[in-house]
Image (cartoon, rainbow over all chains, first blue to last red; front, side, top):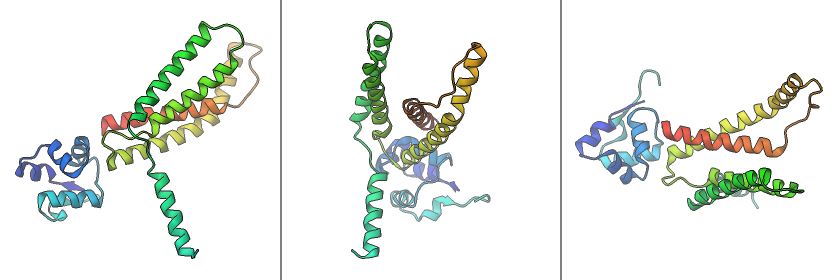
Length: 66
Length: 149
């Protein structure tokens, strides 16, 4: 799974900490998601979608090995 | 009670049990109990005289309680990644605990017979030793996973 959360965050001028607070997780969790070390649950993906005002598909993409 | 309602009730109870965590202050409490227990173990071993076997057994129990409190206390931000890492650490602790309980008695037996000609008789590990090992592995593994997440 690949994602463009870092880009979406930059568009909204949010730091990792700001985004983490908005969706109720730790900054390290956002960092892990951005680095593709952790694939979030549907609930978290939908929370991110709400913050970015975009569908989940726009910032999460399946990679070839998925 | 209907079969489906009974299953629902059972599942709800199980979920409550799975998601059970102690409040954060229990972590500090656990650390304090663990630290004091270890300190008291040293005092008992080197400073106290007479029959203190009861104290040794008591301190073993308090040490286990302290580590258990550390193990099941909530993290400051208990999010889904933390829950996943915690589950991984319990899995790892369980696996290593079983291997430890199976292998360690033979290692102890082998080492004692190599070092001393008369050696020690073969004996299995006690519950304290296995539980202490598992709790220590869980706590260390969880903190390592948290650090590299």
